[in-house]
Image (tube, rainbow, N blue to C red; front, top):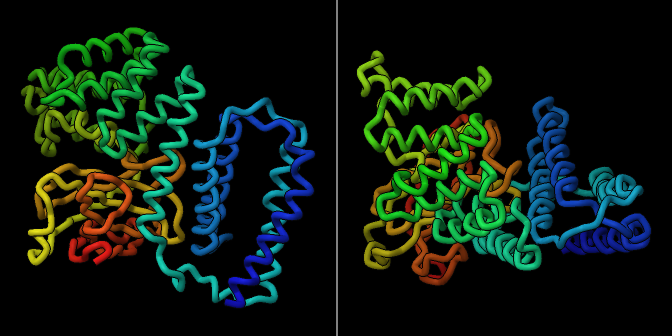
Length: 412
């Protein structure tokens, strides 16, 4: 209680100080692009300090949560005016004042009391509310700024990460209506059309859009990936291999994507009779069904989800499974998968392709919490009667696979 009162006092004093200092410096606010780039740069510096050992895991988690919260707030912020000259000073003060309070606490207080491992993990409801709030804020912003193409694309990618493909198509349709000749818009709209089709194939209109995008920009990487999938789906393995070879030539050596792409090329050549032994190929609709997961860089975690037989009767056949990875300190999900009408046991792969926001994702060597919940309503927010598995904390890279058991009833 004493610690809580102390932190409330620190917060009140910090807000009072910032309330006096910042308004004159923030008469005009920077554009979203500048703000996002600043947060991404700050995140990069934070990673470098952590990798160099200048920042411990607990400090890294706290700072990353703060940056993640700022990214979410940016989605909900209204359009802003050009940057004011004193913006840098304002940001410096906004960081320095709370940081000074924290420094004093660590100097004369009880830092061990704030060890994240001693705190309860944030509730799934809080994380779900953060996610829904961010999407609702972005939707509202686009109602106010219907000509914001980048906003529509960001909304589409967010819905794709949740596998809400109909909503994704609605967002890409808005972007396509605004800019039908922009390559990035064309490939995103093509993918949404394929994901909402009964067979999830790229034949027909989706392929036309992909080819149109590549005619405008022959180096459009996602367009090349999707075209390779379309050719593979049509039985043209040689054409798929040729297309993905073009894509590979655009990627730098050492890129984690290259090894996975080489497997796809080798498998396609083997099917076409032009190559040697290769690793098994992904299903023909793998790329269309999961967006850019097939070429996602970074670590991947295999999560096996099982259903407790004692609770099988409580699981409707049309329920929705959510598998979520988040930082131990809280903040928005680092990655999330949504599976409609799952059949157990089920193995789900989490990777950077499942991230909610750029710059907030699964990282090698980081501690993360992985949880699962079977939603009766299909909504991201937990509700009484849902089935859930206890979250497990792992270190990415040390653990490549784990199991979760749906053995608890929310609110039960």
